Image (cartoon, rainbow, N blue to C red; front, side, top):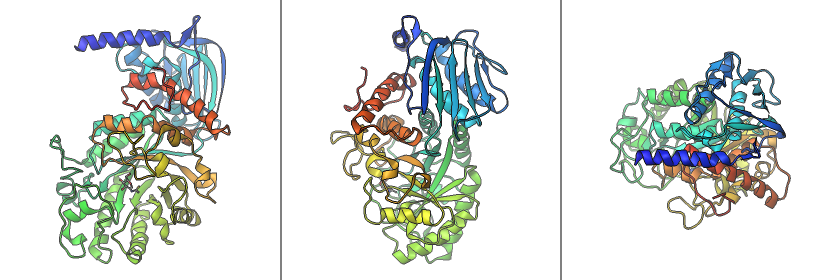
Length: 523
Ligand code: TNX
């Protein structure tokens, strides 16, 4: 059975190998997210047994990543040295975060002013190779890259995905796979929604009951299948931070406060105004829990938790939630937000909050707002979002009706939710313009775009991928590529074509995806 699968894979590899070659020259393949500019040349560079990948100093780790990504499929040794036919160079970038990539028959050169730019260039190069390059098994292919010259850089500096590990827990290996999936799309932040009513997923040494009690459940109980605990130890969290960093992805931890806190309230009775701990929660309602705003114990708790999370997290951001605090009075909410954001800012981190946090006029300077209303803002949402800008901050856009990956694709999709204006097709996920969402919010005030995936109905990495792909590709392109001024129809035709080009690569990479009817898939 296993052998048959390997033979089948090899055959598939041989078939796909023919695809990019026409009349002996490698055919142009498309890149997604679309690069800023590209001019194709004559001929092709072909990877072979003697290919060396060159990269010194800060370029060495990226060169090693490229070698590791290509060794399994090509079977070549691809040693990394100072000089190679594929050369990674720290030098100049066309713009921050960007790179240049030149492919000629004699060699390939990627240049950037920082390793993150080289890494983006490497992701482009992987897409210029035959699809089998994404596989983890030896494949037969003509490992050629058509001559081209690319200049590329991101439109927005923050390009994110969010994963809710609270409603359902995802093991370290699953999160690593998701990190690899998003790295391919040049996303550079992974926001982990670590706490909610249904579970507290990060060990806090000074508050052990948070995970001893608060991590005992998830939606629908523990599913019966979990033998390991439903949380990350601090070592496991560090492992995720490091793995993400090796893909130039910054982990953004979220501790959701003051609502969405039933798990914490069930672990520490003193956080409740009546001193009585509620039962752990396994449903999917929102808005029923709140920390007790008036108690000193609440702030002692927050000092402990926020101190540990900040110390564990090398990245600049700390997300403190603030959404859907429906069980907290307006007055209490404002008192709480001023206090908790001050505790957060005292750690040196930049605070991020869901847009409701903008109800407060006492945010630490530079606090970032994350907008999660619709492409046409619902009441109050635009105003609350602009409040962050008035207080010296910027905005991350996650409009729920286009960027929430947990929405159904259409009414027949198993699982998924529909509250955000009904199902979200791939077309809808792509055809919106970030600067048109909030009147008065300029391009410079937008830090970036993020695609959250909430997991009330999603249990496995395959299910996550199925809901994410291909809509996360839309979000990644909106975050990276220059604004395209064509008509909606022309823009989606161009995007759909390139998405179809990604299909054999997703398959080679073992990424589960939805064969959406609005995409012109090639098979
Ligand atoms: C809204 S968006 C939520 C989450 C849910 C999600 C489901 C936001 C800040 N809160 O609590 O999981 O909808 O799509």
